[in-house]
Length: 272
Ligand SMILES: Nc1ncnc2c1ncn2[C@@H]1O[C@H](COP(=O)(O)OP(=O)(O)OP(=O)(O)O)[C@@H](O)[C@H]1O
Image (cartoon, rainbow, N blue to C red; front, side):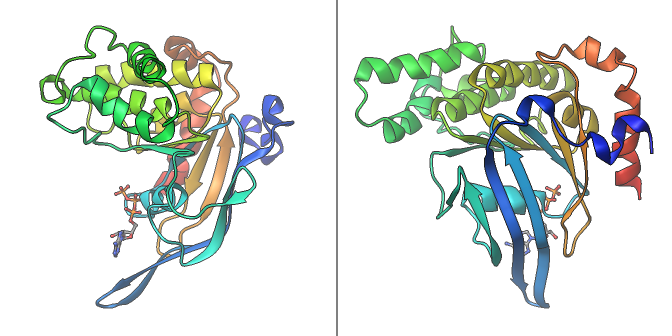
């Protein structure tokens, strides 16, 4: 194993003093199927610090989305527990905002109205002007400063996902959960949105967990890449700290002497 990716390097100095924001212990998920119970996750442990950005990679069908939806409170646990900010979760809540691959905006509403729906729920006591400010601030941050009043149907897929990102950040969650958020986008748009996401994340210092199939994306985004074993009975197989400085500039990341060591390590995991 290359020294850069040895287990001794598994701590992240700037997060050392941060508390745990997300803790999953002995997680288990069983789906009943006509052929009997299918154990997707078993005895899965995961702990993520406040302000950390973690990517999760693993083979298709290993249970990544299952894990993410369990953390989101959208999928029941069959065993184990999940704590957010030291409290056990019970169902979904605005402390965990999710960005899915498809943003599923309400087509008859504008970009701003789509963001406003959640903001109204989470900040019911804020004035109308304050709520508008929150929506506009995040839409502006994702590059839609001139598109507040465009109907969702008139937005490109990339623009719709920008709204999805603004909508999630506008809830001011403790944890941002991203399930293949850029999976449906062309590579140029994908790169642009990775930059947008990191820029806002850097500013908000929020804890983030992103599932991705793209090894390069997992490295570019994360402080730590979690590798899941293939199912059934999937768990965390390995992890890799990505110590590149932030804010990250794509060209510098790609030219970093350690980049291909990290990439090779992750590819090796996926290929075995
Ligand atoms: N509701 C369900 N009932 C039965 N089996 C399910 C259900 N949801 C998911 N599965 C199965 O559980 C396994 C894990 O699915 P999941 O979507 O979590 O994997 P994934 O790693 O996110 O896959 P992908 O990378 O392809 O999105 C798969 O074999 C899937 O077919």
